[in-house]
Length: 362
Image (cartoon, rainbow, N blue to C red; front, side, top):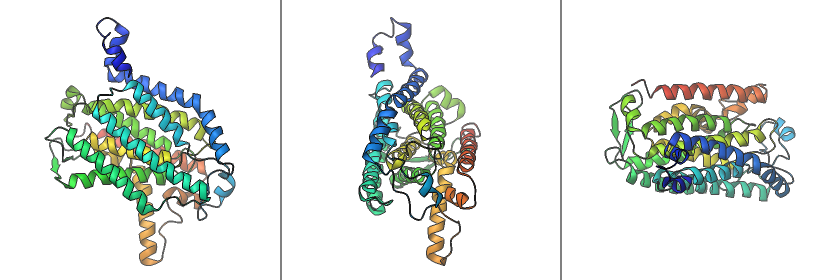
């Protein structure tokens, strides 16, 4: 919106001319979403507490300590993140850019699915929301639509291709399998972030780290000079997603202020599902799907721990971990919650640096 308002003054005003630059608008998006988070968080948290007098339902099979430490804390705090994120994007991005709209579509619709899931948990006082089958069907349908839109707006020579990290000229033609692969990336990222969201501050910081990393990737992939220098595939228009990533970073910082231990509010599925899906969609749009598995490796580990635990118990009757997802395993081993959270943040940072290193190691 601001880009449109100031575009006709570009030749006359030095300040207005700044709006042409993605870097300037990314900084504006970070500050705007951060400010909106601080301004509206008290009102949103009070409202959530009023609507949820007993707080989020606690897993009966979860760590026993959570019954004492987490009870009474409201959930659905992701609405604060999404409000600040979307409002900031509408202000600072180029609204004629199709990549912005497809990511906003996925973020909003996955947020609605998360809202329904959270609302059901609260209304029936159960830690179980809508059925996994129904949720996956809804997520898969949205992800397919997003994959199709990205396929249509991507450069023809890259539309159904899979770029391989560390190799500058290697592209794997997926053909129709591209749609299934893109769906897997989006839905997988969404649910992996959701599984990670189990301790105060555990999910939001790795999400911000991944968003910052993909903000850099999107900006470089959308800039012909930088893309050519780094031997990554140039995708016109995808650089605008750096502003979305900046808005997500600012909204995440604002949310973390209130989610830091002891949390005043939990993110809930409305936030975790939406943010994970947003990261997956950006990775598909920027043709860095495999790099997401590195940068978001912490989310992958959490998701794999659940898959391994379920498969092992179903086939052998034995559990590999004391409890899944992985962070609960370390809780059961006696690690303090802040210890787990900070160490997982360190792991997320290291993995993000490794993922960004793939841009040059080609």
